[in-house]
Length: 291
Ligand code: SAM
Image 1 (cartoon, protein in one colour):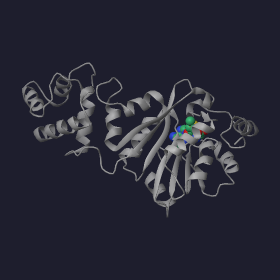
Image 2 (tube, helix red, strand yellow):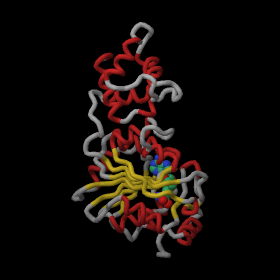
Image 3 (cartoon, protein in one colour):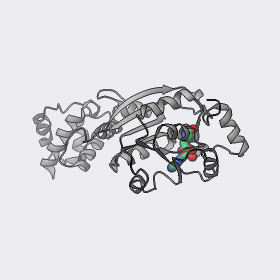
Image 4 (cartoon, helix red, strand yellow):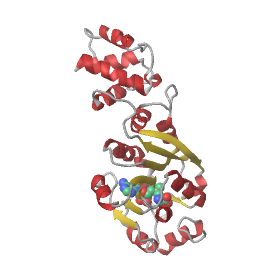
């Protein structure tokens, strides 16, 4: 409704009344569109038995929506100036807790253990600060936090890389890392006009449904990611050349061709054409040979 925080009028009122100046360096672009807020919350598949963890509540537009749908909302905000504003505007909502902190530094494991008692699952829901999208998402995934969905508004180009299939130029180590842990699904592309102020990049909402088990089983997870990194080190080089310069020397190099052929991978292919299954087979074969 018109009196919701995420309406243009109410947002302008709150910003003005508190004399708040938005900081570009913190990625402060606030949502002022009910339709987009609804789409984000719907994509998170929440109900009163579920919890939501929000990163960067701003002045609380999404937080308010989440509090009406979820059983509990915890929102982590880095900007000290927003804390008193949030406590005022979110005062009516008893199931909301605002935490002042940097999402890259707070102890997320304890935060999850301590705040969602009695609920059956927690999802991350956020309009992320774009300058740290990848570190935030990778932190949630690599720490293997017990989450159901990650529904985030991010730069459209980053969303496309997360969801990319093998073969295209968007497909790279980010696609593989995300798809190893999650099933990505584009929710919607978002016009600039839904924010104050308008960002100068295109945006999209993506849902990452966390897998119970990683998409592929590998002998050594750290090595698997090392192989992927090496395979994309120089995009114009063949897989053979990238792997040879990372894992072999002049004398051992001839063995690489046979190894690749033995798992059905043409040495002349490029890293961007390999599927997750092929990377798993490749990493296991290299691991057996080199470690
Ligand atoms: N959720 C609000 C909305 O949709 O209108 C605001 C979203 S705004 C794109 C990003 C928010 O993240 C800002 O409030 C910003 O201060 C906050 N933020 C930036 N860096 C952060 C960090 N490292 N940890 C926690 N919050 C951060």
